[in-house]
Image (cartoon, rainbow, N blue to C red; front, top):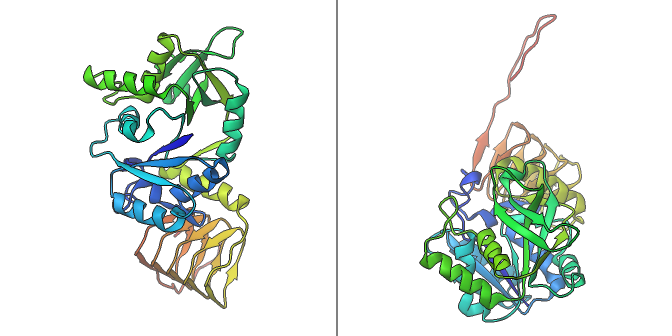
Length: 336
């Protein structure tokens, strides 16, 4: 089986952090998002990993080659135009051939490893493929699965419907066995300009396969962490730090307190500061005379004399506060 990870997007919902890096290279809990995804693929032992790259692809390729090049057989496919998830999958056609595939989105991190999902897929028995699902509160924001009555088979798929037929949301992990047919359908969609909301959707291609008689089943995804927008990034950072074993780093701590869980990179310097809990600090950053909690701090950043909570600071930033001298009378209330 081959694994396809679409990671070509510009990540507009994560601006300004993706002005200078691809979405999958945003740092949380000790490493970029793509690192957490690949860690969870390891137990699956795939024949090959196919990364669909595009926006600022050099950073992603360099990181993956350095840290995972000796673990996986990795191929890169360039998506020069971001025309949707369906389009990105079609671009892998020559590399995939007729192999079975797993598709794992490049901005989703799952609590379970992909081996668990694969085992659930195999328990489904004979089928064209399996799609991970979870009950969601706002189904109109997701690809939605409608099951056949009294059957584990999928009756219908629809991308972000105005009137959802169910609350089973597609979680972003798919297994497909009849890959030649999937590529045939995706190719037909492009030739006939079949789009939903301006993009070629994988959901639409899978729905067309169902209409042709293919049998897709589901498996349950207990929890997933969407790293595609800033408001969920800190929550994901917290969850991953709770799961993470403390790892050694070449960090210099001077008259400072570290409150776990934290992830601190190499060559970080902490001076007269309190860091944590739930704080990730990337390589080469200096923090002095500051208090930081529930935050993600990028590489080579300098932070001094500030109190940060629930903050995301990018790479090469310079954040300098100042100490205040106050003379406050009785019954005063001051907020900074």
